[in-house]
Image (cartoon, rainbow, N blue to C red):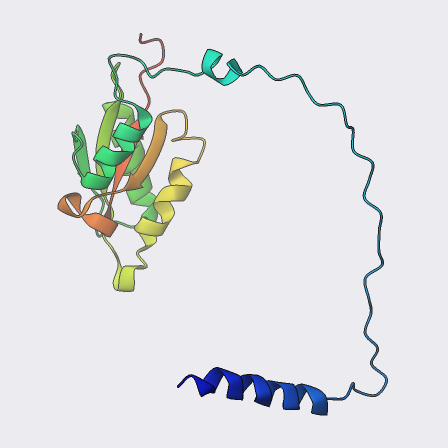
Length: 169
């Protein structure tokens, strides 16, 4: 087995030696360029600058990473749920918008939107939801969305995270 790499190298060398360029084809070589002159003056750095401007998460709220971890594990509190299965796209969008508007309150809320998977995972509502969330009707009220954990419906459902009601502290 140790001879195999040497045999391969020898075979490759024979193949390389037998190759000839095609007629009329020339190989372009890259032109050598000189590098631009670099400003040699180094910027003044403050070793503690990053520490001075590091933002701390609010004390009474979990950090953003904790929130992402809870979503991935399906350990988030659902404040409302709507099932859009079997509805036509226009009707589903209208019902979802009404549901979102009814669900807005002073505290951030999480909604579970069940769209269904559709045939072979290509459901119309499932695909349309991301477009709806970024539309003018939804975006003032929606902070974000993510695919639901399997315990909440998996790829056939979405978490929709609502913003706080405007003017709420």
